[in-house]
Length: 292
Image (cartoon, rainbow, N blue to C red; front, side, top):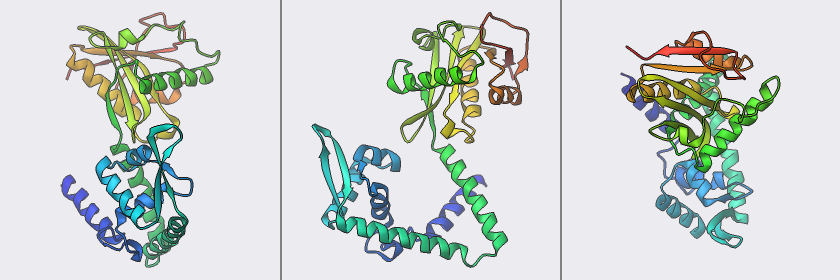
C-alpha cells in the first residue's frame, strides 16, 4: 500500500507540472535542461556542485550542458588555474531565457492554485511544505566514516563550537571524557556522518566495549537540517550498530542546556540513571537496553 501510494503521487505530480512534456513551460527544451539552466542562475555554478545538488550522473549532466551550450544559453569555462574546476555560466541569451522560465514557473504555480478555494490552497501549501521536508529527509545518507576525513572533522568542529556557545561556562573538549579518532575507529568504535547533497549535516559516534554498555558520543545535527528527524535516525542507527557488535545496553550523558537532546533521548526509550562516569559537563546520565 505504501509503495503504491508513493507511485500514485509521483504520477500525479509529473503530470501536473508538465514534466513529461518535451517543451517544458512551452519552451523548446525538456524539464532536465530547464532545471539545469535554472540552477546555474545569475551567478554561475561549479559543475561539480551542480551535479551534486541535482543528483545527476556526470555523463548525463555533461550532455545537458552540451545541449545548452549548443543553443547558446550556457558557457562552461575553467575556474582560475585549476583545470579540474569548471564553472557553468549563463550567456546573455541564457539570462534572458532564465528570466522567461522564472516568469512562466510563477504562472504554472498560479494555475495550480487558481481553481482551488482559499481553504484548499492553504491545505495544499501546508501539505507541500510537509512533503518537501519529508522528501528532503529521505535524501539524507548516513554511513560510517573515518573520523579523520574532512567531512567528519567538519561535523566534530561544529559540534564543539555549538557546545561552546550553549554551555554555561563554554566547552573544552580536552577536559571532557575522550572520544578521539582512534576510539571512534573500528573495532574500538565508529563515527556515523549524515550527508545531504554530499554536504555533512550531522554525526553521532559509538565507543564499543564488547558486551559491556556501548557509549553514544558526539551527537550533532546542523541547524539547517533540524526538523528532518535526523537526530532520531542517527540515534536509531547507533543503537543498531551497537547491538550488531555485541552490546546489550547503550549509555550516554548530556548537559542540561541541551533540552532538545534530552527530550529526544526520553522519547526514544532512554531512562535516566545515576551518574556512571565523571564527565565534568554532564548533568544527566541515560541508559537504554537493546534487548528485544
